[in-house]
Image: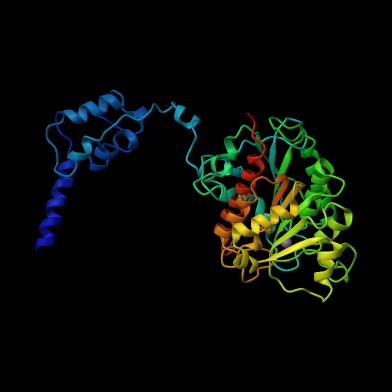
Length: 436
Ligand SMILES: [Mn+2]
């Protein structure tokens, strides 16, 4: 009975609010006569086709509504909230920065430009390397570049309360997107998915084309530096090659390699047993990079290692032939994240640095990647280590093995963490290259 009373009361209200009043202005719309309805009281002319309103504009309509002195008890409060919408052809608010989830997706909403053909000056270029033909286990990193861009939508400048590891850190005051350096998203290198030899050569030429751009406002470099969005880890060989040819010292670049795997595996064992063509892949590229002289031996370092070795000679080959020091994932417990960063800085010294970050450095619980391993680092540990590298001379970076194929588990966090690593890289690239 009580419910019936409520229902009746509401029905009478609804009828009352739908019933036109004799003194009301006659308004017509494509939706019919809706003036006086609760929806109209709340949204006003939003639900009208203003071209069909016989008299007046939004302000006139509002005035008329406020002048009504017979209100239904439900709709009355909303009548006071009526406001005038912009003219249908007025799009001035579209020119202002939109919501972070709107717009065509570039990394951190950076401007995009034609980088492979034009020679416009710029300081830091973002470029994608959509490639996963070198993967030994779980493919999908060809979707990584745009995954990282999707994950970067909430990055658009501003000071972060956790950038830098102390309040006195110079990094704490850095906004890499508004530092005076010119950052551009160059889109992706068009890498064929059918032949890794052609694809990697395309990447090399794409990197070379971007590196040839003069810098715009840099205090340290004459050429554009690149942050590459991968792509499986094979792409780093081409990124590193072009960075070495552009910025390198005769002894090679100090390479800081975040990874669960050493990636200097013997090519004869990993892939090379099948064909020479197969010997270059995401587990052997650092062997080839060291062999080519791109890697500064004994001044390069792995961070986050935990995958088992394949053969008994791997550890010696990695340390002696390829020249890498190693910090395992458990070394982070032993030395702390800040302590690891200090040790890395001692190893690379004043040399120019290339930083390559395999997403599998993160623990398996956070991400999807080419070859997942248990016992990885937390996102906070990684951000602390990266920021602890403040002051290194970073000439190039990449984030790789960002496996965000359709329907991938952990896709959203994989995208977000890849973007966050790039954000940290941009902080490091910016902090020692501050235009006045
Ligand atoms: Mn790797």
